[in-house]
Image 1 (cartoon, rainbow, N blue to C red):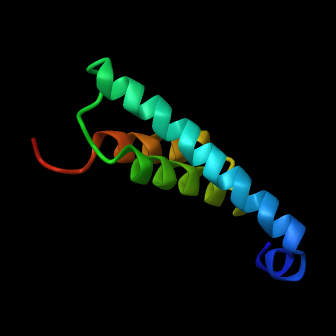
Image 2 (image 1 turned 135 degrees about the horizontal axis):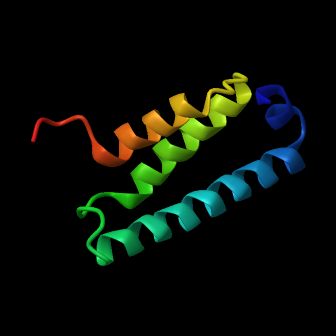
Length: 83
């Protein structure tokens, strides 16, 4: 993928646009959940980036175990801090 990004400016531009759009949509959703009181106030943009990175890496590495992804998303959403 990195080679495609470097070799083809059109591919690079489309991937970047898709990434930005996906992060923006997910961040907007997360912010709506903050407003609804379902999530605490946080940097929704960063959370969206982390979630999308986890999903893309699972896809690119062929991780087919949905449980791993579900638990990873749960960790990102719920955090690891002691309550």
